[in-house]
Length: 165
Image (cartoon, rainbow, N blue to C red; front, side):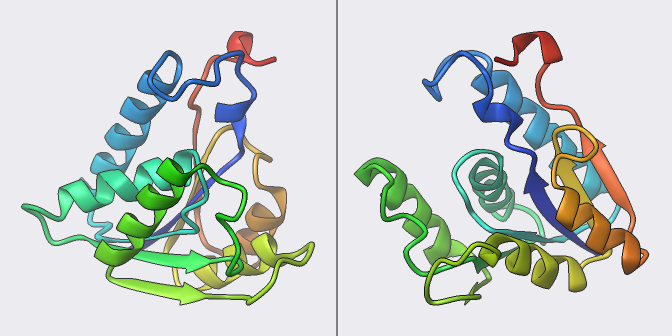
């Protein structure tokens, strides 16, 4: 079975900005535990847009799981210049993930206002489940699209609301 992973962006509404500090460590553990739970339920193929944050962390964990498990990572890139304003370290991680993914598809050559929505819809159309890290209505356009297609949605809180800005 196939799962699309999206994020509400809650991970970036915290006071902390250093990925190696709290609450990011705890968020990564939650991401790993949820992906492992889905894998144990038969989800062995995952789509992400590999944007920085939860989607990238999910991709890194899925690649780690590939070492001893039958699991696939599929990346759909919203637009070609997605990493233009990222640090060199993040770009290097992004491209390392792309090299190890089972497939990488470019949805648009250039950014436009709905490129992330279009990418999410492409991923969801190929999936049996939409997993949104963050609360309900965290990815409203994607959730609406999944509901129209009768694709189940699971929500996984990643931080306590008291930790939000």
